[in-house]
Image (cartoon, rainbow over all chains, first blue to last red; front, side, top):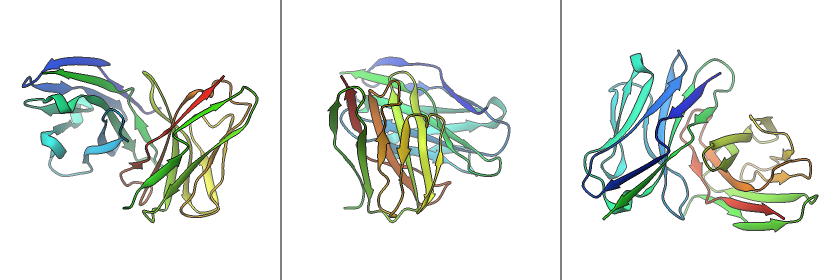
Length: 115
Length: 112
């Protein structure tokens, strides 16, 4: 069965620190990859997505993610975090195998950024 | 503004009572979904619907029911058969089955 693993459940950083959140998935075929973010009190929203092409994708608010097919990974990065990046981040994967291809979410990573 | 509206935002119910959570979208999306979010478990799919008058069970459909009589609406009923109904419920929609999901603000159900 497909699964998504996010390595860190809680991350605490100071402002201006660099961020990397890990995401690995288990599926050998074609995938669409997503990172969603949930800011405190707000709804889940799309941060960035990968469907095909350049494996380095850029999203909103300075975030980027790199798809490494050989490692089944889609890690999220930001060179310098801000207090406003405090949120919960979810990696999600859709594998294509015929029929309905559902989106599988990771358990999420809570990021707290201290000023 | 286009979006997804979930109501109520907070709901308290006694054990044994059925409750219905509303989800309405004005994005003209064909597909709609219900997820359950529990701390440390991410989002788990309850039911989804790719088209009006059709819906399918997700990974944790037991104790839940849905209907899709209109494109805009996808209500979720949490029945008394759901063993652990206290949770945060999220409704989402997408243009097609492979598109990105747009989420509502969620409904927090507490069963006393």
